[in-house]
Image (cartoon, rainbow, N blue to C red; front, side, top):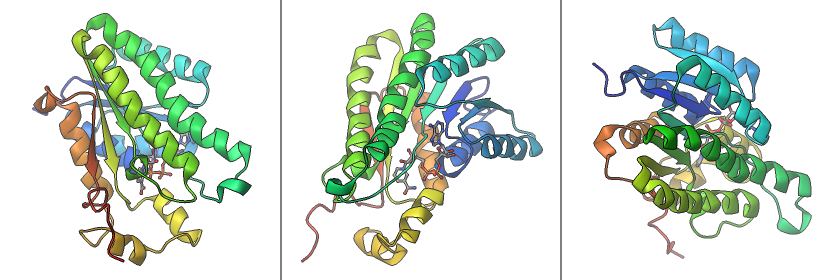
Length: 256
Ligand SMILES: NC(=O)c1ccc[n+]([C@@H]2O[C@H](COP(=O)([O-])OP(=O)(O)OC[C@H]3O[C@@H](n4cnc5c(N)ncnc54)[C@H](O)[C@@H]3O)[C@@H](O)[C@H]2O)c1
C-alpha cells in the first residue's frame, strides 16, 4: 500500500528535471500521474519511462502561459480521472541579464510561465478541488524568491510572487479543505541549472561555496519533500513555503 494510492496528481513541466523527479516519487507512492508538458517529446518520453517500470502515468499537452490551454488540460484530466487530488505547479525557465538591457519578451516569458501560469493552474484545478472540499496544491518557488540576486529581477520577482500566491490562496481556501504549500529549492542539478552554468553566470564550484552544505542539491532531495507535503502526513501544513536549499537562504550575511 502506497501513501498516495488512488490519488490523481497533475504535474506541470513534469517531462524532465525536478518535475520528473516528483512524478517518479508520487507514482511510486501509488498516485496516477498526469505529466502536463509544453515539450511533447519530453512529456511522452517521461510517461514511457514511468510506464516501463509498471507505474501509472499519462501525458497531457499544456502551455501554462495560456489560460485556454490550462482549462483544456484540466477538463481533459477530469474527464479521464473524474477528480484531481494533487496539483504540482513546477513548469519553469530561466533567463538572466542586466535589467537595463533586459527584453520585454524575456520579462513576459518568465512572468507568464512562472507567475501567471501558476495562478491559471491554481484557479482551474482549485475550482474542482473546492467542489469536493479536498485537494493539495504544491507550488515550486525558489531561493530566488527570498531577497536580492542581481541579473535575476524577473525570475526572482516571479518566484517571490509564487510564495505570496501560496500564502494568499492557502489562507483563502484553508477552511474549504484545500491545502496550498510551496517548496523553494536551492540550486539543484537539472537542465536549467546546467543552462545557468553554461551561460558563464556561475560555476558549480561557486554555487557550492555559497551553500552552507558546500554542494548543490539533487532532484530526489526536492522530490522527497514534495511527496511528504502532498501526503496526509502534512495535513496541518498550509499557506507556507519550505526551503530545501542546503542552508542557502539562512546564510544571509556572507563572509566578506
Ligand atoms: N534547478 C534549479 O536549480 C532550481 C532551483 C530553484 C527552483 N527551480 C524551479 O524548479 C522548477 C523546475 O525546474 P528544473 O530545474 O527542473 O527545470 P527544467 O528546465 O529541467 O524543466 C522545466 C520544465 O518545464 C517545462 N515548461 C517550460 N515552460 C512551460 C510551459 N509554458 N508550459 C508547460 N511546461 C513548461 C519544460 O518543458 C521543462 O520540462 C522551475 O519552476 C524552476 O524555476 C529550479
